Structure formats: structure tokens, C-alpha cells
Length: 75
Image (cartoon, rainbow, N blue to C red; front, side, top):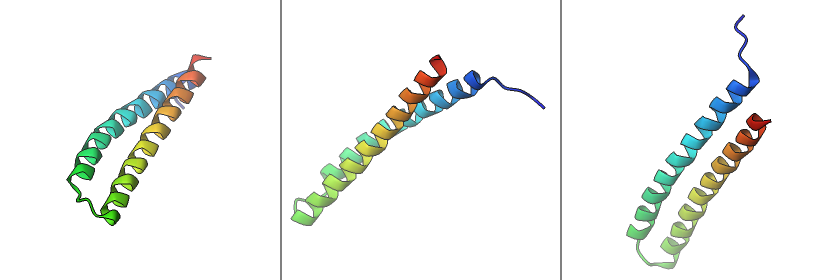
């Protein structure tokens, strides 16, 4: 059985989460572009807000998870 150090696994996990954060930033740019292309009726305004809130929530979760994993791997 191959034994892999926990620190190595946590470092890989943190790197993958940082990549996920970068991809979420790309999604944010795309989502903002999409939200700007939506019309101005009240229902469409709510759709814009929902899209942007969901993208920002995803981005913040991925960054917090990456930061947490980096902190764990540092100790």
C-alpha cells in the first residue's frame, strides 16, 4: 500500500480549490455579461440579482475552502 503524507494531500486539495476559485471568477465575468444582456423588467432585474448572488456565493465558498486548506497544510 502506498502511503502519501497528509500534507501532500492537503496541498493538492488547496491547489485544486484555488483553481476552482479562478474558474469561478471566469464564471463571474460570464455571468455579469449575461446579466447585463437581460432586459430591464422587474422580473428580469430579480433574475440578474439572483445570478450575481449565486456566482458570488460560489466564489466566496471556494476561496474560503482554499484558505482553510492552506491554513491546515501550513501546520
